[in-house]
Length: 380
Ligand code: ADP
Ligand code: MG
Image 1 (cartoon, rainbow, N blue to C red):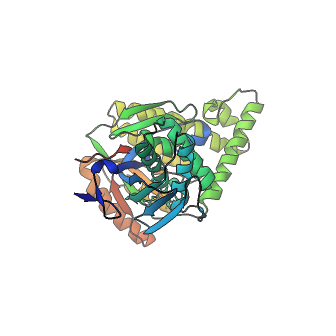
Image 2: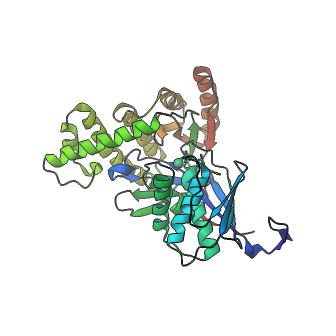
Image 3: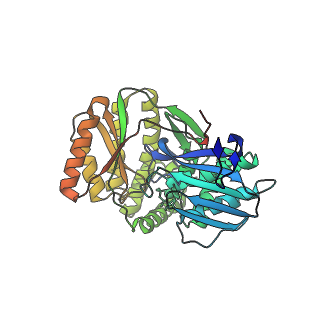
């Protein structure tokens, strides 16, 4: 017999268990805010929430990771520092309540195994899991894209992060063993199956978390907006930078705007080519696209760093590694690698040894074999 948090008898139906996964973007970097396409996959790590109604007018939320609890009135967001888990959960509950016929007080116990701040979108998973918990307990039915938009708004308004919508869409809509080919302009999407054999995807976390990343991110957004304005001034009726003609991108001045625009246009093309490579089970082609993406992010978009470049170079020197690139916003975070099945251990050893020697720290390495999907967790 299960017992609930206050020691009473509880039937299974009194609790709802939900989960939402983190994500890794296979390719399509820094083009979500340029109207381009992205190709994220959900990973096998989630934020999970056990949720039930409370007979109070106050929510009680508990983080098992942080060993903290917080109680606050329904419809409010308690004071907490920007970036605190409380703001994501309370913000999402407020957003959801706006779309529900009634908003009861909830008890939520939150636990996750997505590394925080590693670029795997633990924050989006937390928001989506909160949305699903609200849905499960209240019986509200929210369109998945609408829920992703709400989660994006929570990051922007309550957490102060001007993010695109890829992470939330990937967490809410990603399916196991599929990549989500997503237009960040129209939000149209397609599920692209990932071949089960032939190669593996491996993630290497540099361990670098740069404080500068946010200001550089804003700088890139401004440069892209300037490049788009220039393009429009030259007479093109452009919806976004990714829609710019390659020749026009090449002609932009100054060079820095040209480079940003050429990256955006080429990266968008690489995303489509990567989706085709997956469909054709052509891992070698996918690998080449990964490496080309990295070179562009390093040289044209200038969002890499010494540690990421080193990890990519080290990986590419290992026979059987088909391609490697930084993934995420850059200036730190992870690289993603396409690796022949029999080469995973070689890459693990080479990267660990070389990185330790060069940067005096051990990289964390994950094989992206499992993947999970957002939704209810049903008892076996
Ligand atoms: P990322 O999304 O790349 O992992 P962020 O800095 O955007 O990094 O989000 C991390 C924040 O998300 C954490 O500081 C915390 O506030 C919240 N968070 C993520 N996972 C959990 C969790 N399992 N429990 C509580 N808060 C979490
Ligand atoms: Mg985040």
